[in-house]
Picture 1 (cartoon, rainbow, N blue to C red):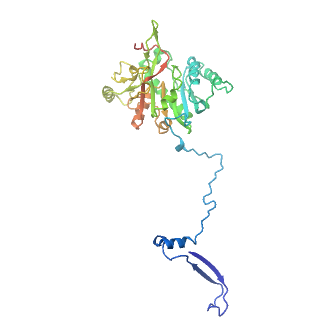
Picture 2 (picture 1 turned 45 degrees about the vertical axis):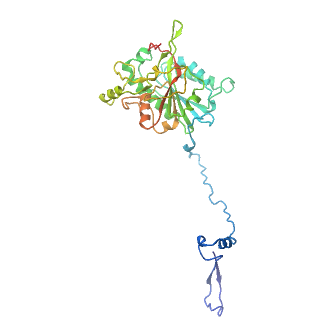
Length: 374
């Protein structure tokens, strides 16, 4: 229907109109005067024959905000999938450091050997409470691997170094560091260090977070691809160490913080104060838990999975959205656990998967505080 309006200056005697500037409204109706749903096919054809194709120019012009202080972040586009490398998913490798200078050259040799595309990897370090030259050695090693002119080493996308002291006073000797009395305070400080590093380094573009300790002796170059292929929320390997006696490697078990909970441990927790932190491997707390360290064989299927309730922190790969959802490392007793074990408890409480690979072994340096199992 079309509506036309015209203004007429009517003279006396013109069609009986005697008022000047009379508004004439003319209505034109094409086709039958009925709703389209009530038209017959022929009536609809006749109706549409009088209609032109509508042309709309700039119906919704984009809103342009040209202001440097405003940044848009679309996390809907950030995914963590089993085809991480193919999908060019960004990985953030995080390592807290304290008195770690002796381990850093080998740490970076192993890091440089990773086959995951280095331009998709960002590195983050937190240096705190160190009494040695950790920061200086870290700077030199980063300078070495980030030299773009070195054809043997592909530089990583970016590096961030965070300095933060937490007042740790415990000696870094094996005896004091792994003594029972030092465990709870030490784990709380380690949790804080991880959380500070995570909050400073995690960016919107990251799909995965890879926690990797500095004192790893050996690990597969394809570890990122191997682990992301499982597409699990949180996944850890078995952690052992090499120790040779009479020319034979006893393959010592190292990380007893990756475990499956037990009724005995749950009963023990029910008798403890809520602020008490259970630590594994000490006579003060006999938990009866199943330790992944005592399971597995690196010669068997490396993709075999085991659901865990607690994990160690030597090597953890996490979907970044798990951290974004608020799952971090409690620097307090969470269900009577702290740091990485508390992290696993918190993740499971939130409905996330916590998976271990008993036959996938990462080798730790031999710190000699455990005799190992032949």
